[in-house]
Length: 214
Image (cartoon, rainbow, N blue to C red; front, side, top):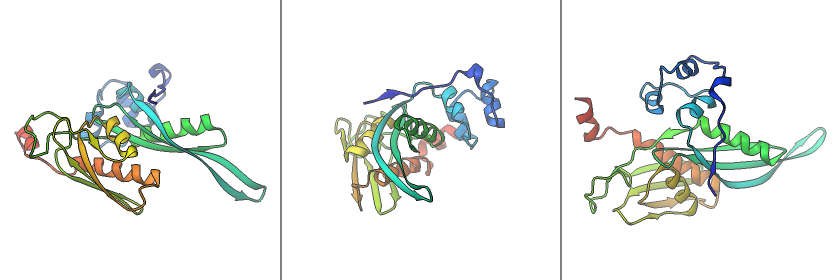
């Protein structure tokens, strides 16, 4: 179930970096500007200010154990997917002795991993021109898992695995096909491979971008 991402009060935020200071002063007003200028996101508060309507969903919770001199320590490990369902998506992990703290850490980690996703109508079977799918095929890999995401005609829906379906939904993609290889039952690697594929949507410059630069 999707839940609203908790955000900080901008007035209480004390930026620790130059980018954070520019955001608080209002000199940077959008995430698009952050990525166009290749600024690093080193403070989660930057995302709180520029993308206040993010939602997240817990995808996996498991208990991990670590052997120490004092004995065996058990912690919760949480995996979440985060996005605004309109072109920005992320995933994050967090570990802690308490589940609530682990979720908070995963949310903070996801904010640092936020990426833009280029959408389009890349299927030759569809000429609607709306940004409902992907502009072209994209490939991602994590561990043994390989994911190939392909644009689909409008109305097809997300013909992908459950974890990928959630990731694409939070990215704002409504129609897509996928081909996968490897241990896709490993949820974290499956999601990470899909995330890496979406990251590659901005790896290529399309003819539409050429027109914008004129």
